[in-house]
Length: 117
Image (cartoon, rainbow, N blue to C red; front, side, top):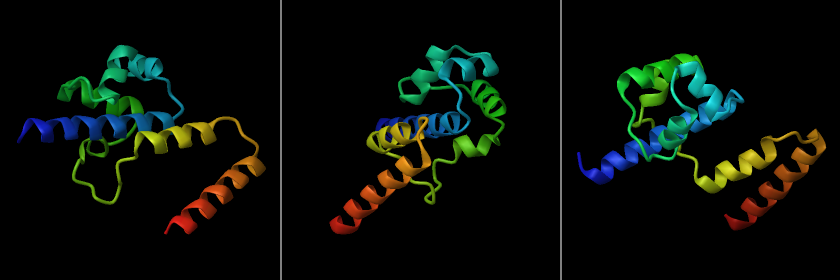
């Protein structure tokens, strides 16, 4: 495996970890506490800056209450890796918003993307 492939795996794992953590409304610090790791380390793993041991990965999966394979399946073609920009859009909309505002944002995005096709 090339160094580039290894970086891709680290990045994918970090993005999966971030997405699962956000789905559960956990901060990096809180997930770290649950997994007996530091929040700083969780952030470094999410950004693909640090590798994570199998033992720590298992503790993170347990803290997220997901099977370990949900974090590790880097070959899953059915779940595209979200871009950083897509995550920013999701984070913006995922905040406390009124349902009608979310519908408006969805309609704007849908109209934008239907014209771009």
